[in-house]
Length: 345
Image (cartoon, rainbow, N blue to C red; front, side, top):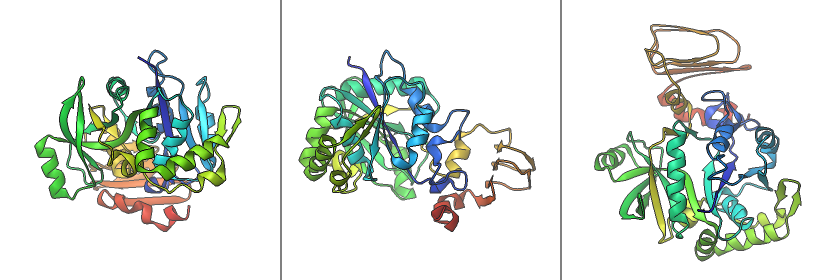
C-alpha cells in the first residue's frame, strides 16, 4: 500500500490551558503528558518509515519557530505557512494541493494525547485502506463517558475490513442525549482525525465548497517555496471563508466512513482533561513541580517554581506559571478561556 502522508495541523490560541498555555506558546509545544510535547508526540506516532511518508505540517507564522525547532531531525518534513487562519477545510486543502492525487493523507491535530501508539497505527492503516477506495474516513474514538464537549459519529453499516459508514454526524449533545449515545453503543466521539485520498478529498471539496477550493488553488499556484517551507499567496488565501472540514465536507459527503479507535485518546481540551490524562497517586492526585498535598483527592497541582501546599480539597486545580496563579474547581475548568488573563495574554 502507498505510504501514508501525515498532515499535522498546528495552531490555536492556548486559552483553555491558561496560564500554562499562552497564545505565543500554546499547548502543542508543551510537555503536558510525559517528556515529549504534544506536537512531538503527534509526529512520532506517524514516523515509522515502513508505513508513513515524511510529514507535512500546516501552521501559521506565529508558531513557525516552535514547529521547526521541534521538527528537527525529521528528514523530508515540509511546513506550509498559512498567511492567515482560515480553519481546517482550507488548511487541509493546502496540503492536498501539494500532494499527488493518489496520495493518502492522515490529518492529525497536533495538540492531542494518545496513550496507545500501536492502536493508533492500526487504526491509521485501516483508515488508509478505506481512503484508498475513496471513502472520507474519520477516526471514531470509543466513547467511554457521556461527554457533552465532543461531537459524535453515529455508526452505520459495515464496509471493508473493520470500517463503517457514518450514518450521521451529531453536534455536541446535552448530558441526557450523551448518556443515550453511550448506552446504545452505536456512537463514537469525533476526534478530528481523518484519512483521505487527496483526489477524492479535493473532488468533494469542489462539489460542496467550490469557492474554498478555487481560492486555495490560486494560493498554491502563486505561492513560493523557501527551503522546506511553502508560503501560499496571502491575497488569494484571504478570500477563503473560515470553515471546518466537518461542516464544509464531512457532513455533506455521501462517502463518509469511520474506523473505531480505542487508543487512550484525549484532546487535552482543558485542565480537567489534562488531569485525567496523567497518572495519579493512590488518591487520584497529580503533581508537577513542588507541592505538598494533605487529605486531598483528585487534585491537580502544576507549579513552575513556588511550593504549593493544599489541604483537604477535592476536584480542585492549582496552576502557578510565572506571576500568574489559577485556582479552579473541575467544573470551573470549562470557563478558564473566558478569564481576562487568558483572553489578553
